[in-house]
Image (cartoon, rainbow, N blue to C red; front, side, top):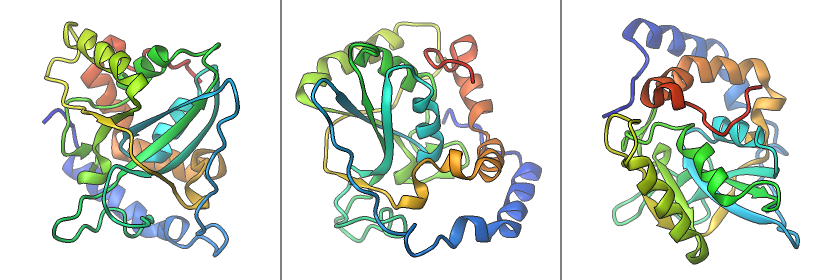
Length: 227
């Protein structure tokens, strides 16, 4: 696997921290627990769906791209009916867990789909098929969900990366047919903006940026402007 997990010592610190600050994560208000509304795609806009581990982090990275109009965290790709944060990964026999995904609405006159793909590839660990960073399990795997019109560009983009020097290990991120998208609860939307301290604590503790830099070397976060 290409994922570099938190060190044993760092993992203990991270776990204790989550226990201390657990109320921040686990007790949203009733209103915040409601499913967020679906995003309307206006004329002249386009949408793309990506799975890149924790949707809080992927949403933050995609929001930095010029041309991105909005992002919404959600669930997709599984067979569990009406998924929520508590149920999207709890599969029974014959069921498939949903991925945590982000739907990106963008202006194709400012940001091309190919540029969006470049930003996505270089912001995740494409060599890990068991999850992302400290988050393990089916729902945290990476994937590119495509419409028939997007498939050729996505496959060409992936093939081009496979010819390059980075990453050093095989790319295992699949390109999948687009599936029904279920918006996540309101408290997950724009989490990095509403809860910046908690968000940075989680992102740093989970080792996301360290791993992306290890996997991609000098190409890490290609296409994403530095904040």
